[in-house]
Length: 321
Image 1 (tube, rainbow, N blue to C red):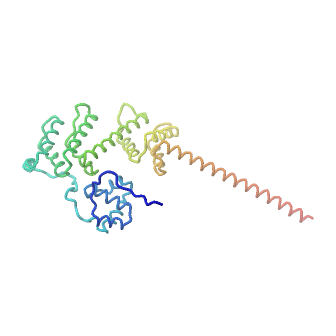
Image 2: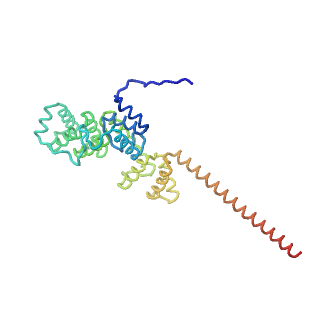
Image 3: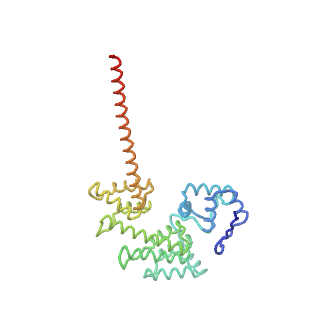
């Protein structure tokens, strides 16, 4: 058989030291190799949760791979990446002088400030300016990502409160932390994240129609249920089946009962309408086999009983003889 050769398509853009490559090969661990490349692609730092999602692994698998890489010397433990500071519960308290001095060093923040004030329709207060500067300086989100973030917050405010709705700087700060923790540090990642949010919002509206909720928003508890189902990965079509079975069984929308149906499907790995239907077929097939086995066992008992009666009858006849 020919020894077929392969080459990388496109231009390589990540440089892996030869010593590191040799150590990776010596580990013979696919998850560790993927995690190393993922860390390299993300500037040398990552979170267990995001790495697990991106690489299709569990957090425990990512943790084990990280420990393996640490033992091999490919990862460092205990150190903190200076380029990505850990977010505090609150942004640092900057003074006006600090902001002015840093702004003079680079016109980048000045551009962010002007665009933010244009979107908000007013001049930012000193407190709001400090929050905006904290997002830029402490979280170190790129300028273009910050502007996309603020545009998104403005759109959300208008969707929730009407055409005149505007976001508060506190709500922008909260969203900035979400983006930081999700490692949304490029325009591409930001657009991908916003597309996911739009799909999720669309799915939530579809589910509202499925549940025949009209003329109002979800209540807090209802939204928690729906978001939980979407987090688990259920499609609106699968949720529609669960709703139908809930109404047939209880006569109305009983959230706890419907949730129990979806949790049972979650345990079985059934998330789409097709998977649910296939699961129904498998369950029905198992029930048929079980019933057939039970009938067969019952028949065998009857046959054995009949045989015993015949044997006893012959024994009695022989005794009389």
